[in-house]
Image 1 (tube, rainbow, N blue to C red):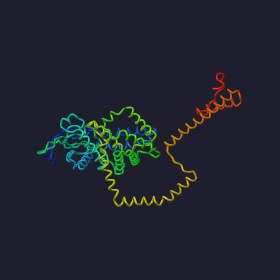
Image 2 (image 1 turned 120 degrees about the vertical axis):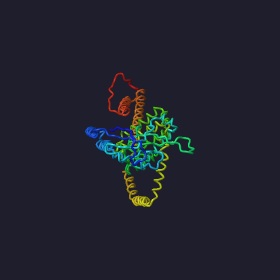
Image 3 (image 1 turned 45 degrees about the vertical axis):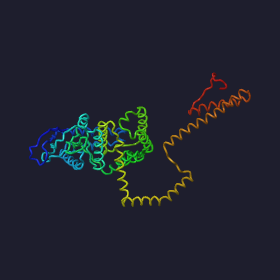
Image 4 (image 1 turned 180 degrees about the vertical axis):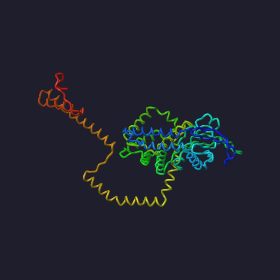
Length: 443
């Protein structure tokens, strides 16, 4: 959408740097964007006619959010404001560097920023050659995004290699530090995301659940985020999540690569089968965040093949739990919890009375999809076993009566009953066995 050129200031501007980059918007890009977005809106309307898409995504809403983001990206005044907000948010973080804006040389289609070009975050050999620990870079990158998402509610939404640099810093006099000092540098703030407080609460629940291996809490967070629609089998989802936690929690990417493919495939099929039967949707206000996290995870594992997401999330989850625990003891929360307990206590006698009445009348029904499936399987097995036992009894009686030459009528009756049970019970289907000369009289 634009081109970036290096330049030097003449020195008349009120800044303490002279090296800058000037971002210039391409001619007529706004009209091209308008045409493209109009075409996408039409395609989105067609997609909404397809039921699987319609049930899981509000495509017009997603496109409205995407359109708003693209229009912000070609508004360089908005980008300048985003850069300044980002600079303020990380002003106290010595590990994060943000370019400063030259306001009097910026406008709607031109943006002038401090030149902070350095080692691209995917230039792994150059980072190592500079004496910088790539594992430390991966950990700081994730920490910076956790802070943006959960504390600031404002995040850099386009973390591709051209927008993230590793900047080595000169060694200070008298420093005994063995490793090289460095900063994580962000550029290009045209695409940013915002996380309102209600979504941050659900996302915090997700991080705490993953960090503490709590499958039930993870499903609860899905509900708060609006992923699950009414009728979702939360029990099956919880069991699938527990299986993933039990097998893979704590593994680094290099360890995951050594897991047998068959095992990964089996668990993947289990999760897939649950998700296929689960009514869910993608909340449109989380689309950009999901994309950002996906790119971010790839960057972290690229920097450090042994990067362990679980270990990184655990301290942050512990921090969130402590904050949650301390906030639970303020007066408003205590009064609310006391009120909830009192309400539940008052309602308990009437609820117990209704429960006992239902039990006495035989109207108490406990629903569990998994148990119901198991019961149906057992019922079918018992039916077949019963049929087999009765069939054997008739077969044996027929053999005895016919072989002894006594009661040939009873022997034929036993044979005919045996035939009916073979057809009607053992196979569970209606069918007919016609008399055949090849059938022995007793077998």
